Length: 175
Figure 1 (cartoon, one colour):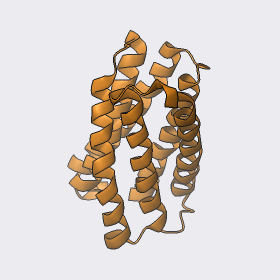
Figure 2 (cartoon, rainbow, N blue to C red):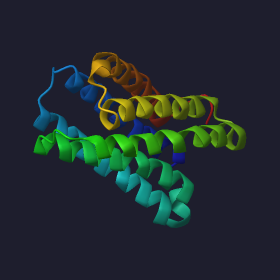
Figure 3 (cartoon, helix red, strand yellow):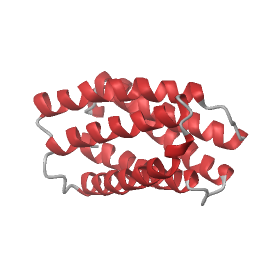
Figure 4 (cartoon, one colour):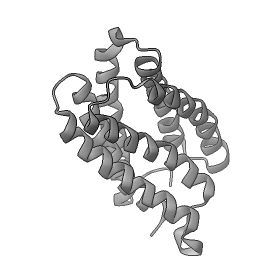
C-alpha cells in the first residue's frame, strides 16, 4: 500500500477519536465508550507504525514515519486506559503531551522542507498546538480551559479526519 493510503486510513480514525475525545471533555460522552475508540485508534496507528518500521521494502514508510506515528498511538492507548479506569490524575499524560508537542514542531518543519507536503506539515503544526493544550489541561491541571480545548480538539478532529479521507482516497494534493 502506498504511504499516503496507509497514513490516510490511520488519520481518518485519528480524526474520529479526536472528535469523540472533544465531546468527552465537554461531558457529552461516556468514559468507557470513549476508551473503546481510543484503544482501537491506538492499536491501528501502532500497527501502521510497526509496518513502516519493520515491513521491509513493501512498507514504503521508515523509522522516522513510525516514530512520529508512535507518539500519537501511545497517546490514544494511554487515554483509553485512563478513560476505562476512570483515572482522575492525568498529570503524567499531560507531561507526555508537552513532549509530543515539542517533537511535533521540528517534524512539521522536516515534512515541509524535505518532503514538500504543505498540508501534512500544517497538520503537524496544528497537532503540536493541540498536544500543547493537552499538556496545559492535564499536566498543569488548568481545568478552566477545558471547554475551549474540547472545541479545539473537535475542530482538529474534523480537519484531521478530512485530511485522512483525502489521503486514503488518493486526492491529497501534496502527495
